[in-house]
Image (cartoon, rainbow, N blue to C red; front, side, top):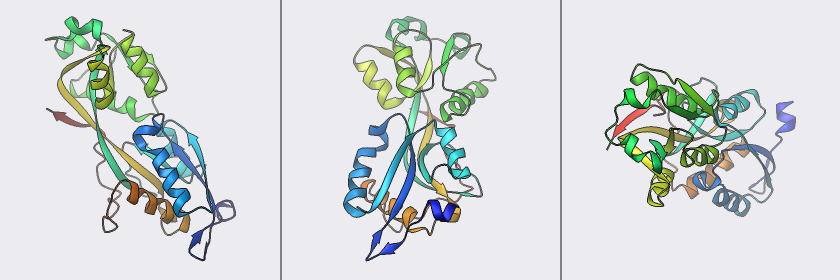
Length: 239
């Protein structure tokens, strides 16, 4: 069934077929537009169907065969999963600009009891936030759940609670007077392109990896990281 569903062959150096690709809620950050433009130019006979999904769900769907591949944040350590690392991002503790006086000089013990805006448990954002709490030996006391990054940013700016926000977004909102940041601490998360390891020789997967290497300027000689490698999803960074 998988072979029939994902039929692809190389004919006159053209890859034919259809691929179901999972994306995140921020297409600009993962460069979906550039990816599709290059894919159409290089492989015009390959049809790409985009499906937006939570990162954790994307991982499961790739393993289960519901998706052929996906952009994914977090840990890729799984014996059946292959992945190409694309970029690393930093997440910062952020709150509404009106909370600046509360955050200035505040200790973690003062921040922990406040409301925290967190993505659903299947997401990498959930794992990042809970990893931060675990570092301090605590857990969130009051949680507001939001299932998209853009919604998390909106709720933070509205003063609903604290959250971990991607640093580039947080600095942009800080510059516009909508958000403030706590300290210099940050958590790293890595963006991957993941696919079933059993399909790494599939012309469709190879074509997608070829396009990604071009737009992300990844040399052909760069190997895909071992499946046992750490993703950096909860690595602590201090500026």
